[in-house]
Image 1: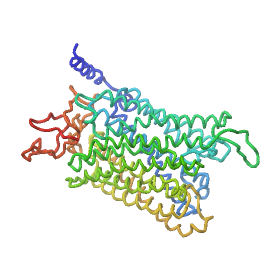
Image 2 (image 1 turned 135 degrees about the vertical axis):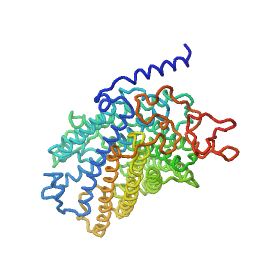
Image 3 (image 1 turned 180 degrees about the horizontal axis):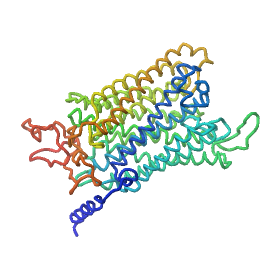
Length: 606
């Protein structure tokens, strides 16, 4: 039988397999359809996100008005806020769990899990992921890990409180502080399951992109979204197992008397029987994941921005091959810069200079991306819908947050601002806010594909402008607080008279944070009401070129009825004209990837 015949038979077999009767449980709960799994990731990620944001607002209130009594503290935290005054141990726990939830559960799983699942099969022309079962398994492991992390908030001794980086000895000695007990153990169990989930998902994404592209979909015709998800998955497979090994060794130190990360520990004058271990070893293992993690979070957001920006500028993305090269360069460089988190750990100055060099080097591919986005916007026919505004906002925060990284990446300059609010401001802008903007841009852009309805554009504008103004309102002043020397994670700074004059700045930051938190409720209302009452979408609402908009509006488990579309061109043929000045398709400023080249039409040399 010929290869073509084989493919033809496979298509019919696929149709037969995917049209069996589904029950409520197989369709909505234990679904193996990538589109349903992407919705599950998104909704779980949003729930975790609102928990994480609520925690940040609670500890911001404590920083702005230290020692003040707030009835809401006692309502939400019970015995951890007697008389409405936040307990110091609970403050540390809130900071820890906020960081963990936002970095891993929202920006890693919520962003990458949602859009990798939704877009990889649809944009490369595949019926589904390589393994629907593993895909389902990866979501449910993520869900279980989320539940365990939330359960740790209700442990009697309190949730983990060693910071989201969980450095020993606070994380390695159960008796070190209240948050070092059962809460810390649950944190480690939750993260171990989360990492297993991420690895299953990442392997699935990689295999799908390599093996299941439709006819004509060469690697150089892939949308930049798919390049970003593909490379992100590769980084995850390389770096996540290192954190898993660190977590397992830490569990052994805590429960089985080993001393991988402990040495010469004294508690109240008593010498503990640990020797030979090194807490710096844990730092190496943690940051070997921790820095690539920044790009595991950022690259999907940058990929989404490439797609949204090109579509809404009605122009081809500028420098496609340079963008792909920059994604690959970022992926490589991000794995050899972890030491810049450890400049004050006693590192050899020569080694510090090596890490400084590799860290500053990563500015080159990052700048390539920023300049190419700006050039894509230049003289474009800009459609300023909410997705486009969030994409432009991402470029803004990516640049402003990245500039302060030059200071932190230099081993001599870093010493002055290490572990101050300057660091908090830097990574929240470059990673937290930028990645959240990418998440919002993706939700507004692909909501019609996911839920068959449109979101309310006017509520989207309200959401964007309040969020954008407040994000800078929170993190811009925080740089100055950090340069003044205010250390991060302190419950209050009243013991240091030199910080008294910064109290008003902390109040200003907290007010902006509270307003930003309220703005997310506008998004939540828009999201939920649009699922049920939004305007029904048309087939291709954004007049976009990629294959997902050729699939029927009604979801099929298999994406397309009959034959999968073939690809004849790259994903960015916007406003393409012929020699006579007419559009390739008369009256239409875009040419979908499945439209064959016209007579005498040249394929763009990208």
